[in-house]
Length: 318
Image (cartoon, rainbow, N blue to C red; front, side, top):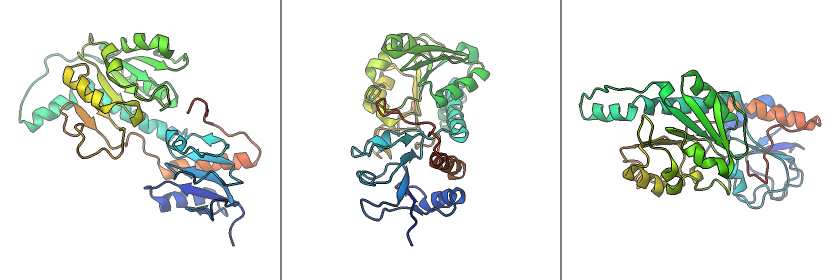
């Protein structure tokens, strides 16, 4: 007999059995299903999704909330038929720590000439670096001061880097010189040597990483031209402009974890570009064992009449 209240899991390409197993551990007695029983299935109460098919959720009469399986939610908004129910972002210590690890790894790699040394090793070339800037000579600018940006900033501060940040609204973050809005964007771009991008994808931020932005970045620091690290969303960047900026010397290097189209096409010039590091959208992978519990706890709290945490502002898009 079909359960009266079921959880729909829709994450094409993910390990569904793994996620079902972890969700069932925390939601005993409640069925976790991969498909609805028709477009108007009355048994679906919650949906846990990543890039769900268009229209899947639109007609479910008893759907109470949608949970994203990742930090981003733009994948949900690609469905233009979404029902008017709350959407919940994933905020977890595990996901935050994974992203901060990636940010620190890439910042240190560029700061300590990692790409250069790897090229030298491939060429059997011994090229000593006579001058090495210290961390406190380098400023890291973080675009996006949400949970992920603030945690990354704190860890970079511990290592001695100066940190600036830019966000849509003015923030007050310990150890960070903060800029906000269009009026603060130019000063922010003039403030840093390495730019870490952790912005959400919205109408305002789409394509923000293009030549107009790169030309406004400072080129006076110890690294020469700035370094770009994008671990936010692929739609933030214009990849042709990144290649052009690297070739023109507007950027000295780029580490990219996200792309305009994923997986990155085999013919993309980013694969072979000597100044680009490509990682396969792996900066902060969602771990079922760590995330299933908090998701189900939110569902239980909602059933008790408690408000949902980490709600998405639909007007802002994140």
